[in-house]
Structure formats: C-alpha cells, structure tokens
Length: 285
Image (cartoon, rainbow, N blue to C red; front, top):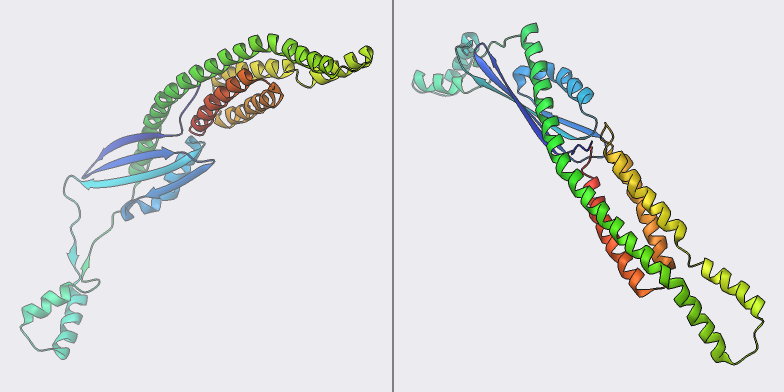
C-alpha cells in the first residue's frame, strides 16, 4: 500500500476551563524531522508529546502545533503588591508627579503582575497523549488518501512504460535483420574478396553488442517488481526509489544499444514517464 508523506491531522480536547487543539502536519523528508510549537503552559510535556509522535511516524518533516483556548474561569492574574510598592517608592525618588501616574508606570514594569501557573495533572497528560494519537490517526487517513492517488498515477505510468516496451520488442524483431542487411550491402559495395566465415563471426559478434533481449526481460521484471512492492502491506518509498533506479538503468542501456531512430524515440518516451514516477516517489512514505 502506498502512503503519501504529505498529510494533516487534527484533534480537539475539551478540558475543564479550556480547549486544546492539536495539529500535526507532515511534508517530505528523507528521515524524521520533528518540530513543535507548544504554549508555555504545556511546555513541560513537550518531550513526552515529541516521543509519542516519533514512535508513531516513520518519516517526514513533522510540524506539531498545540493551541490552548480558555473556555471558563481560570486563576486570574494577581498584583504583586510588594514589588509594586517598591517600584513606586523608587519612582517617587526619581520623579515628581501624581501618584496615579507612578502606579501606572509601576504596573508596566517586570513582575508587577503575577500569574499562578497550574501544574499539569495525570488526567490532562493522558488527554494530551490521546489527542496526539487522534491527530496521528487523522494524519494517517490523509496520507492513505493521498497515497491512493499516487498509486493510481504509478500504475498508469508503469503501464505506459510497459506498452512502450512492447513496441520496442516489436521494433527489435526487424532491427537486427535490417542492421545485418546494411552491413552485407556495405561489404558488397567494397568489391573486395572477403572471407565469409570470418565475416560471419565478426558479424555475429557485432550484432550481439546490439542485442537488447536481456535488457527488455529485466526491464519487464523491474516493472512487475515495482507494482508488487507498491501493493505490499507497508508503504516503502525508499524501496520504490531503488527500483526506479534499476528501471532507468535498463532503459538507458536499451537506448545506448538501439542504433535505430524508432527505438530511440520509444526510449525517450519511457524516460519521460520514468522521470514523472521518480518525482512522485519522493512523496511516498
């Protein structure tokens, strides 16, 4: 089965006094590259959430975003009275003016207002991890849907390459006799006595260099292997990438041995389809 590395998953947690939204986005990457944007109130659980994601996701550039929205009464911010008084005493020494102005200035200075920070209890921790799991499930569903589109495109292009290979095979049946006929005609035009046995040996050796039977058979096998790998239970983009390299190698060898305009054109078309496959394989998990 083919899974795309591109995907998006989201989950929403409703907890007493707040709502937490967890979003996981995935893009292409050779390995696992994880980044996180987590509010300071949940920062102590960042490593735990990162570890949960790393175990669930194999590859991709993963962006984790967590948003917290207040939905009820929370502990309100409190004035830090001793600090404010100390600020006002110092301001009175430095500058004259109404006391209300000094109070306004003091309230803008650091640590004038303090907020009690709630500790994250076990219930909230478990809810966060469950939210991560739900976002990952949604991400995997997205990846599977995108992978289905990729798989259909792969099948179409592999079948096109196979059709072109069939045309190569048909054209090759006429190619070798044509090459043989051209060589015989060239020798006859020389009007020189030629040792026929030696000529036949050299001709066989020469024509063997242009034989593409092995390449066409291997190319057909590689195409089958690509499709069977694509249909396996696990998505394996790296393996598909290796197979495309082998497909490309056989196509290039056929092109180098072709010595035929029609075959060269077919090879160019196969290369074009293969390049499109290679581009999309980079998106496969």
